[in-house]
Amino acid sequence: RKEVEQDPGPFNVPEGATVAFNCTYSNSASQSFFWYRQDCRKEPKLLMSVYSSGNEDGRFTAQLNRASQYISLLIRDSKLSDSATYLCVVITGYSSASKIIFGSGTRLSIRP
Amino acid sequence: EAGVAQSPRYKIIEKRQSVAFWCNPISGHATLYWYQQILGQGPKLLIQFQNNGVVDDSQLPKDRFSAERLKGVDSTLKIQPAKLEDSAVYLCASSKGLAGDPYNEQFFGPGTRLTVL
Image (cartoon, each protein chain N blue to C red):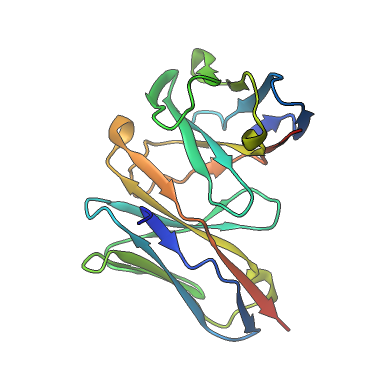
C-alpha cells in the first residue's frame, strides 16, 4: 500500500458544480497536511493547509479525518480556472526527523 | 519579493553524461528542498537542507546524485552519470520554517526539465 494515495481522476465536472476528492495516508503519526495546486507544466503552489478542525478559504474547504486517515478537499461553485492537478502533502515528524510525501495528484477539469 | 530561481529551465543530455542544476531560494528561507517529479507523479523529495546542513537525504540515490548548499543560500544538485530513468522535472523549493510545521509553506521554483537520451 502506498503511504499517500489519491484518486488520479480525471474528474470532469461542469462549471458551477461542487467537487470533492480525498487523499488517504497510512502513517497514523502524520501531523501536517496540505493541499497544493499544480497547473500544467508549472510548479506546485500552496492552496491551503489542513487543520484538525477543518478550514475554509472562499470556495475551498479542507478537512482532516484522523480516525479514517484521510484528508479531503471540497470545491464549491467550480470555475474554469480551477482546472488543475491537486496534490496532497502529508508530513510525519519535524525538522531533521520529518518525512514529506506528496500524493500523485488528482486531475480536475472544469468544462463550460 | 523574488521567488525561487532555478537554472537551467531545460536540459537535454545523453545517458552517462553529467548535469548540474542550480537553485537560489527566497531570501531568508532557512529550509531548502530538492524534488524529482516524474511525469504523471507527485514530487518526490530527494534532499532537504536546513541552512547549510543536510537534514534528510534518505531518498537521494547517492551513487549518482549529490547536492550541496554553500553558505546556507544557493544550492546545486548534480547527477553523474545520468540514466534514462532520471528524465524528470527537478524542482527546488524553500520555506521559512522547518518541515513538519503545519504552517510551513513551501515555495517552489519553476523547475528544470531534464531529458536523458
